Image 1 (cartoon, helix red, strand yellow):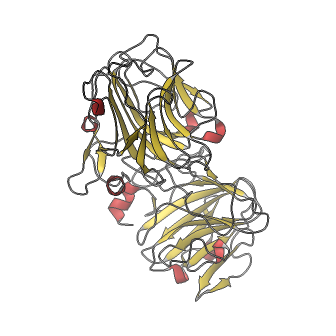
Image 2: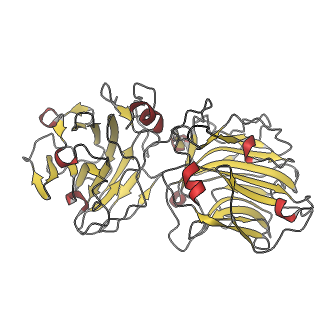
Image 3: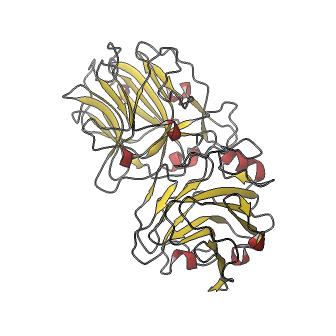
Length: 465
């Protein structure tokens, strides 16, 4: 497990090869892609490579089916268990592998390679699973028999992010899915270890795809299921639209909301690619953190209010030790600065007590559809708020007070309300202007202020956030 954590791809390594797009899948919307090959390919020997960034874990009772080929009675599939192990199931429970490692990092991309060759005379080489270039440790319930035909590459229904009985969908981003029909390939056909950092990174893979081989890059918003291998094996979309295309990828990872942080009050979850946050506590303030912490640099993100009552938007220091699992409301924990949108004032923790500024310090932006912009200047320990694109002069370049000179993350607190975050890699709403930062990264409703950038790993690498 330590190896997987050390080599986890968080997009900050210069690769010489960029994956430009990914596709967001949301289980609550039954989003998946599917295809039935017109004829069978090689069912004994094949390789499946894909990148995946989980955005929600299983709820403790359900699995998440990452891929599957089902013929009506048996199937070949990969899934995350309710405990977050990975299972490669070759024959619908007859022969399956369960990983020792657990996959609970929602702030990193994992690269999976499923390598199959049932013709091999060596039982241990008939089916192998690699993550970030390393073979997974685990156990088989029973060994697959030599020369077994599997359902993958058969002319039957193939799915990504769905189980055939419609009860096991996936919350994740997928990027660069490659299927090689007829060849068992090592993970080095698709990626390599960065010599400086030791991080696993993608390469420009160009295998011989074979009969049912394909490559899904999700490049065209108008044809997200397009096969770019040259084979023309287009995939169909279920409940997926152009708005589900993302730029959060293994070569440039964006900040999202962190579903692993649990505050005093439960909420109704973080959804839609970990960008939508809602609260149903019935009185207590529910909280959420971003997945990226910064100590310097200038950063910009947006929040759209889809419900209007009470929102606290700002930053919170994560190096104080008491900011998670606090007995206090999340907007009142140590070294937190926020704009109280309902009261139109700033609030911060100064010396362990709440200090609230004057009411109506900025324009009252808290109606449905309003878009709040946050400009965080860690170089000067200041923060500014924008309302629907307009800088609020009364609280522009406000001091971070006790959050200054610390490691801070984006923070949101709310009571019985929902909001949509846009850090630039994906947003649940489609920005009408679709503007980028000065480096060309991120897609926002309003232009980031001069000198401010989206929270993504390419920018973090440049500005040392």
